[in-house]
Amino acid sequence: MFEIQRTIKYEADRVPGFGREVMGVPGCEKLKDCIQCGTCSGVCPLSIYMDYTPRQVMALTREDFKREVLGSHTIWLCASCYACAVECPREIRITDIMYELKQRAIHEGVYPRRFPIPVLAQEFTKMVHDHGRVSEGLLVTKLFLKTNPLAALGMAKLGMGLMKTGRFSVKQENIKRRAELAKIVETVDQENLKGKA
Ligand code: SF4
Ligand code: SF4
Image (tube, rainbow, N blue to C red; front, side, top):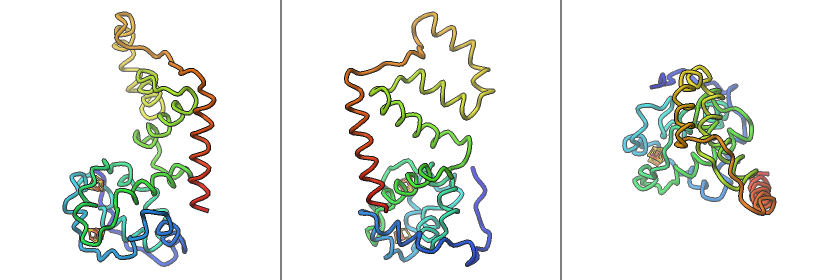
């Protein structure tokens, strides 16, 4: 569990325009209607593990506290269960806002270092882009090496044993015509970035 942030926020910490930018993204517009009732935090099964509750993330985003939300663990702990969005009395698409914040955190490279979830998201996407297929053994190995290399060393013996019996592999699989898939992924990315400009 992460320590709940109770520090006072100052005007100088704001990045003016950030909240407006997020609310300009399709699906995130209703954030402006948040009444800070806390229903989202109450129904969220993971809020007890988050550094900011979903309600706090909505407030901080709307009020331009960019560094706080993009650097938070909350957006990565969100399991996309949609419970908050279903219960929100103002029909705010909280889950989609969390996705938008995750994308921005990766784009700006401000996610918590060595935290596995953003690393997994990036490695997964890169593998799909480069090879058209996710090779699970290789993905898990990369994840361990980038977030907890000591644990990877500790599991090396087990991994070798599983490799010998053919139950684990770090071989990268590829689809045919993967350059075409890469082009599609790049086009989607560019369209996404255009939407944020
Ligand atoms: S449930 Fe909706 S209105 Fe209430 S705090 Fe959460 S986002 Fe705001
Ligand atoms: S979608 Fe995310 S923030 Fe909303 S209730 Fe589920 S885990 Fe919590």
